[in-house]
Amino acid sequence: MRKTVFASFAALLKTNRNLDLEEGFLIAEIFMALKKTGFTAYAAAHREFFVMCAAEELRLRSDLLEALCEFLTEKGIMRKTGPGTFRAESRFFSDQGPIPFLLAYKTACNSLTGLLDGSTTYGKDVARDARYLGTGTKLIFPLLGEIFKTRGIKTVLDLGCGNGAFLLTLAETLPGFRGIGIDIDAPTVEEATAALRVSPHNDSIRIREGDVRHPELFPPDVGSPEALVGMGIFHEFRKDGSLVPLLNRYKTRFPKARLFLVEFDTPGWDELREKPEGPKRRGAAIYRLMHHVSEQGLPQSKDEWRKTLEETAWRVVDMHTGPNRLVAFECQ
Image: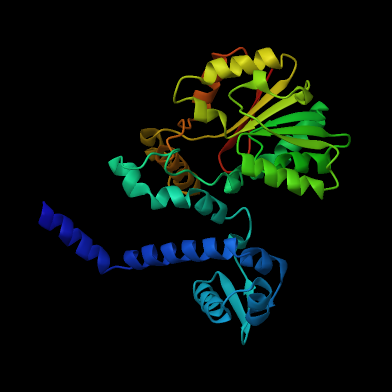
């Protein structure tokens, strides 16, 4: 058996698959570094840039930055337009690319050995970086905005609001909009509040620190919003069996509001393998795995979500299908 395993591994090394792994690893590490140093934003803002100028403005090593740009050009991610000048050619430079996900879970993945052998505990010794979460759900913002406009909804409570991006999007599209965001992560709340101070929508949006597990403890200025929105948060309460009671407490606390529960349609492993090969299946597999790594409540399929909601005091009145496996359950 051991000889067979080593023979298979040796065969792997003779193919291009090991190069794919090495290149994928390097590209991920490069982009996380470029994101943290501000270079991805710089490259996205400039149609074409000179490496020396970028390095000087961002206080980076010009020789290493140029080498990274050359490598990314070799991989078709950038384009070299002249001596020392380059242009970004990939969505990796966008917030909708994979880099926020990599940064959010980098620490957890670096601790995978300890998580596997039990010497490291998630939530105590290591945790994901909440500042980079929530970018995947941005794809459904336009759809929800249109629904709210059709329903005449102008007051929204965003549960687990992160940096407040969804509320800012609504403020830009809905006249007379007012929103409140609740998030448990203090640094995220501080960053969102600071960003709002220089925003033209500062008077219409408030961000508060709070625990979405306890709606009865929300600050008084939450008021009576017309809509509650929870994007990618409620699956975290499936693991300990608290989800249904929690949703019922929201119904008691906000009896006249509509609930928009947004989750990724994520089948179980066996059901997933019956799906056709493609980006949706690959994305669902990654999403499910990372929830095991971070010991969160596990995601589930849209059919399972409907069954779960039927056990609560809420009534599903519509189901809206968005991009990238996103589903929004509209409940009353």
